[in-house]
Amino acid sequence: MKSAGVVLLALGAASALGAQSLGEVAERERERRAKAVGRAGPRYGDEELARRRGDASAPSATATSPSPAASPGPSPTAPPVDEALARREKELAWRTRFAEARERVAREEAAAWRKVVEVVYVSGIPVQQWVSKFEETEGLRKARAAYEELEEEYRRTGLPPGWARP
Image (tube, rainbow, N blue to C red):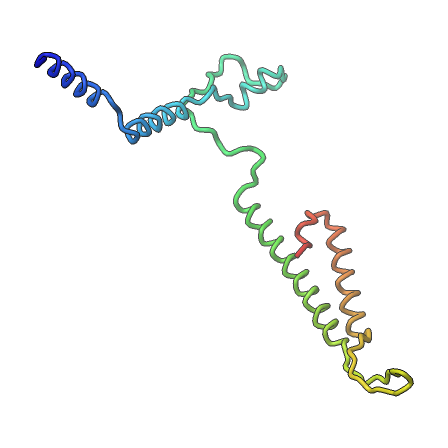
């Protein structure tokens, strides 16, 4: 009887020691994924790609292939920092011009509303009441024309249409 208790106690201790906590399992999984990310596929340079395409202007085959540890250079399609900064400044300038033009049209539209007294007949009895009426003004026509000219000027530039939107 005592030997059976000792055996059960030994089995319980062994199972407790062999059990893993959830934290340990998560840590091992993180390590495994970090190793997997580190194993990138082969990297090819411009010379290798040109040679594989069969370009006549490709460098000779004796050129060494890039090592897997080599870091990729800047992508040829990405604009340099100066060009990107100039593009952002250009976008900001256009967006500002459109915002100012829209603001002017909105101000002129708000100013075009007038409060007037109007006579309305209710059951044959004249009743005076205040009414807001919209009267298109010269300033509003000019503001709208300026906005349309700005849109046309922008359309001719060929820049992305999103820059003109609010």
